[in-house]
Image (cartoon, rainbow over all chains, first blue to last red; front, side):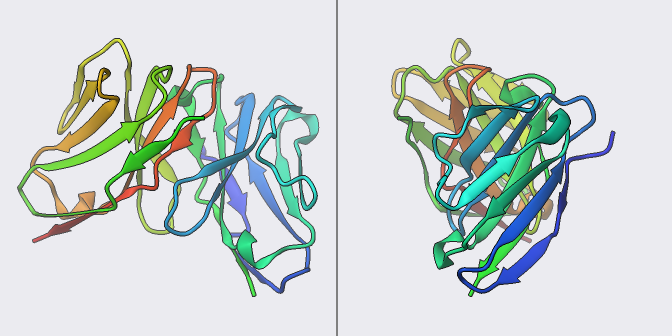
Length: 114
Length: 111
């Protein structure tokens, strides 16, 4: 089966600019996650979707970050305006059901804010 | 909330066994995982163990869980240069909750 697709692979922007990341999960996977991985740290959950509804966005900085999952399939994560500390790899993961046994991660988008 | 700690670096020679250690703080964590991340890649699930188990073996991988001490270890037998990567320990309260990751252990395997 095809994996979790993410684009772009790399993005460099100036602070205060906007950026958007796209994720296409594995077909049929109902649960979708966005994680932020800062260099030297483990991934941290930003938001979890179940179909097109938000399950957990408690760690999403809502003043600048937003995410949506239209029609319960693809998802976009947006940062507006970006700060230097947003430089990280943004990982998307999906699972057929809730529970990490089914997690599949994409390769991530590496964001550099200068 | 849950906190997961790992040693940051481990260096071994090819053919030796590697042991990567992890501790977690929340005794309610019942699902414990090991992920592997190679440069420029996403995370690959290696194995997982439930808190009602003490040990799980899967080919070259052995996971040991000491629930009393909240200590988890991953042993890789006959370590190969292709095993060089960052290994993350992660914990979850249930199969329906999200994961809390450690900072990762960089494993370097030299020929």
